[in-house]
Image (tube, rainbow, N blue to C red; front, side, top):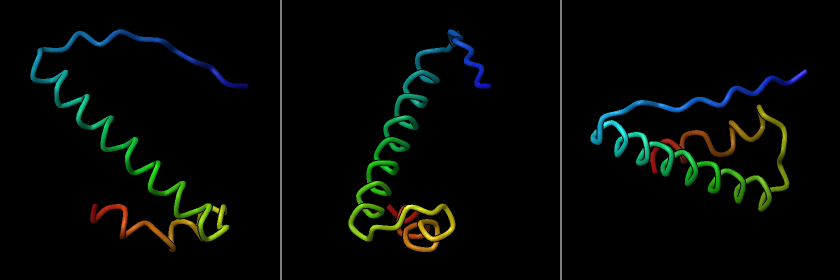
Length: 59
């Protein structure tokens, strides 16, 4: 069973900007990991972690 909660954050402008930057970086990291996974045909969590974790953190 999945539960989803929709919330609205009450942030100051500088907090909202920081959150947007964080979300952008997270999405870029996910895209990079996805590309690495498909290129190497590796989809298991542990194998993918070994393949790309340190590269992802460095970028």
